Length: 79
Image 1 (cartoon, rainbow, N blue to C red):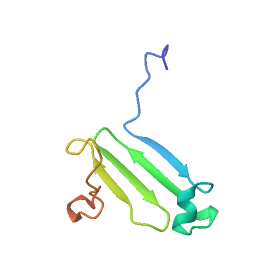
Image 2 (cartoon, rainbow, N blue to C red):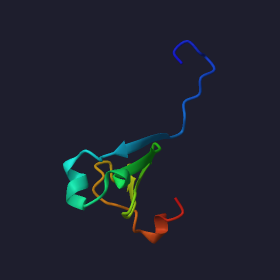
Image 3 (cartoon, rainbow, N blue to C red):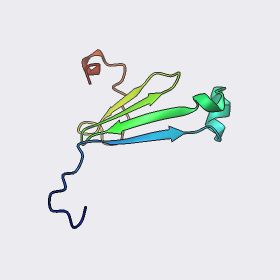
Image 4 (cartoon, helix red, strand yellow):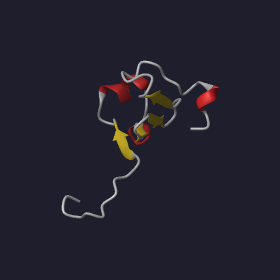
């Protein structure tokens, strides 16, 4: 990457989160195999999908502190 002049960075980053050994799993009453989440992030948006729960969507352009979950907003469902 540092020496490859033809390298093009990705437009997004992804992450899988497992919280099967954490207190959160126990408080949510989830079995270990369902204590998972997936996240995709672009420069502007962060989308988090939780197995068995509503997803979350954050707009970094207008909410850099991630205080407003845009997931329930019908205007953002196309994302």
